[in-house]
Amino acid sequence: MSVECGAKARTNFNKPCRQPAMANGRCRLHGGKSTGPRTEKGRKRMKEANTKHGLYSAEMIQARRHARDLIRETREINRGV
Ligand SMILES: [Zn+2]
Image 1 (tube, rainbow, N blue to C red):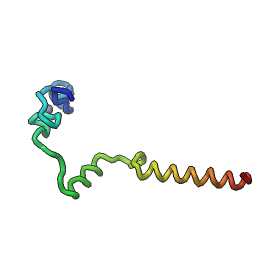
Image 2: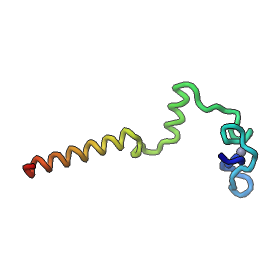
Image 3: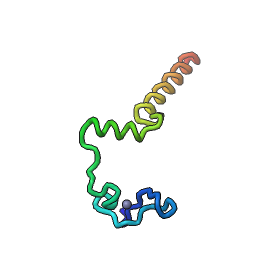
Image 4: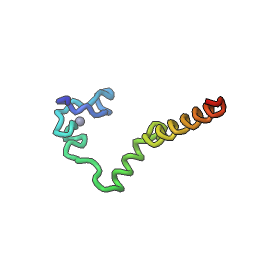
C-alpha cells in the first residue's frame, strides 16, 4: 500500500492527492477516518452508485454461462450425440 493518499483531486491540475495516507489508504481529507458504509441501506446505496450496468456481475456472468450451456446441449442433442 502506498504512503500517499492518491485520491482524485481537482486542485493542482487534477493530479492525485499527495497527502500522507491513513490506515485505510486515504488521507484525513479523503475519508481516512471513515470505515465505509455500515448499514445494509448504506452498503446497497454505494453498490448501486458504483454499478453502471451490472453486465459483469457474478449473477450476469453465471446467467450467460447457463445460456451457453443450454445452447451447446441443444446442438448436441440435435446432432444426435
Ligand atoms: Zn487525500
